[in-house]
Length: 162
Image 1: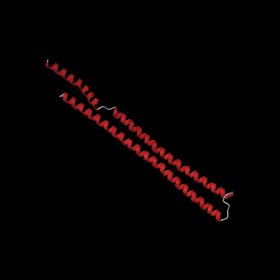
Image 2: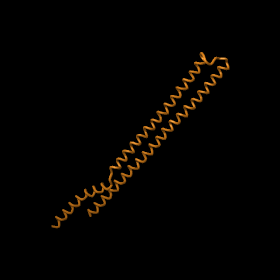
Image 3: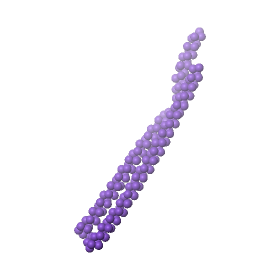
């Protein structure tokens, strides 16, 4: 009777370890997927920043063209004095805004990539944990642990027969 319990316990230990190993490997695969999604987010943030910077450059160019047309229509010499300073200010402000957009995109991408690194590390830890689990080792350990109880019971049985 105890032998049957010993075998049942070993089978239970094997199945429990196998399920735990499978769960850890599945969690690692999910973490890998999340890391890939985070990298896509980083690339998207950089692309969005490039598009916003391009749109800003276009608008700044249009503004500068309107300024030049307006000043020229009023007979103002565009290369000197206030006219030149206005155009230079427009260029400087456009460059500052463009740099801000690009910096924000890089920071956003960095956040996504930090998350991706965290997911990758999590996947590595899960795989390491899964690699350390041996269903056969768990079953063997259970059998060895139960063997002492079975031997003791047989010893007691033998004493009673005497």
